[in-house]
Amino acid sequence: MRVPRQPHWFEPVADHLGAAYLRYSFTKGTEQEVDFLVDALGLQRGMTVLDVGCGPGRHVHAMASRGLRVIGVDISFRFLQVGASSSAEVGRPSVFAQADARVLPVASSSVDAAVSLCQGAFGLLGGPGSKLDEDAVVLAEMARVLRPGGRLAVSAFSAYFQMRYIEQTDTFDAERGVNHEHTEVRDEQGRAAPAELWTSCFTPRELRMLASGAGLTATKVWGVTPGNYGAGKPDIDQPEFLLVAERPAGAGRSSGAN
Image 1 (cartoon, rainbow, N blue to C red):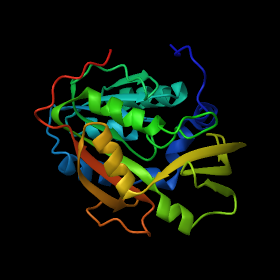
Image 2 (cartoon, rainbow, N blue to C red):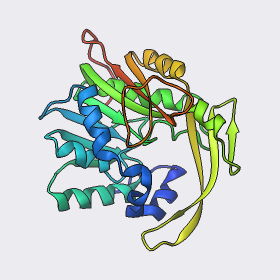
Image 3 (cartoon, helix red, strand yellow):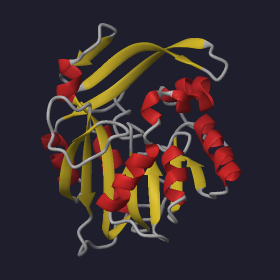
């Protein structure tokens, strides 16, 4: 059932893409990314992981295949349909739910780890009419649902990389740190449709400050490329940063709803 609310700008893009999203080259390194994250987050079989902005579920399926219990949430109903369908096909049952990442339908202190990867939710809230603190709200929600001692991983587009390699079809809002891209996307039959994308960009310092503001301890910020995650020092040549943070073990139970 669709959630009654004002549609997010990304939803018509996802509706057009459907399963064709998985044809993009940046989706082909999922197994490598999950292998790295299992080690970086200390994940073990039976743990519960929340994927915030899970898209068609590629990371959900890869984590489930490693014995993890995975919950995938996304704003796009179409992407969730693709994820749930492929989950049944590969025999890796996982939970998929439509949700706004700023109000997660997950109980406080209930998951062992949380991820938001490839601008899955964190980083896609800088569109028309958005507030400056939207990404901070997402991070705070992810922190809320973590058990004390739980860890999260968030990938974020690099502001350094974006400004160094900005495309002619892009406009960068320096005040908000948001890149506005005019592009086109193709559906499963190859039919093109124009699309506008708004992606928030960050520096490592900003990511550490956002983590601290959410009550988390930032343990690592690495410079990474999709499909080639590693423990590399942040630089200006990697398109993304990967933040790993932990909810302090002594943290009290969050008081948020749900």
